[in-house]
Image (cartoon, rainbow, N blue to C red; front, side, top):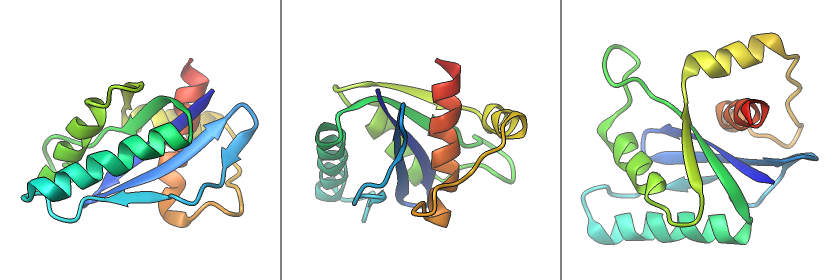
Length: 134
C-alpha cells in the first residue's frame, strides 16, 4: 500500500510516499501552485497532482491539518490546495491534526531516511502517523 503524506505550506505541497517497506525516494518531492488566481495554473497543479498519484500508484493520502485561525493558521492558498487534493477521484484523503502527528512522534523513535529533504519531514511524519492509524 502506497501512502502519500502531504504538508501544505505557502503555495507548495510537500510530498512523501511510504509503503510497507519504508520511504520511497521519488523524483517528485513537491508540487507548486504558481498562481492561485489563474485558472490555468490551478488546472496545471491538479493535473500534476493526478499524474503523481497515477505514476506512483497511491492508495491513500494523509494531509497535515493547518489551523483555521490564530497564529499558526494556514493561508488561503493552502486551503484552496487542500480542496483540490480532496477532490481527486483516484483515492481517499484523510486529514491528520498536528496533535495526532506529535503524539505519534513522541511514542516512536523516528529515524529519518538520509535521502529525505528537511522540508519533507512533516509530510513523512504525517504518512507514518496515518500508516500507524490504519
